[in-house]
Image (cartoon, rainbow, N blue to C red):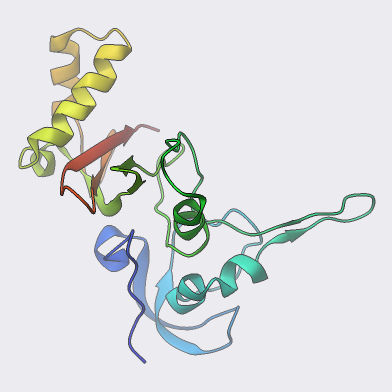
Length: 187
């Protein structure tokens, strides 16, 4: 069976959110060749396949049910919905948080949005990777400017971004206008 495709995370293997290894998924019980290794906000399985994330079965199976006087069920999510613009439909947020592989950040990963939709996560990036995407670097510069960083401080920080270390940038692509977007994180 072919691996599922994700609109908002087109290559979980390349981004580091999945690993090619034989395993038995804790949710569906099937023998699979690709295992998810990103964050899960819910019950922690021994092993999880991309098929169960794609179908929503993992979100349901790994959710947290209320007990005692509490009457709620909370599905597991694979990324938080933080700073979602008002023009992004709830269905998009649910697809990103419940049926799309997340990605691990140093502190708190944050999905990016553009043109009223979620952006596609391309993976972690350092300065070298971002140089090809001036609009992503401009986004990071503007972010630092809002926090009062001077241009030399910002440039020194940006040049220290490391795809495999810290600080790290996270590269996204708008699905509508193809603009590259970036956020950053540090441990």
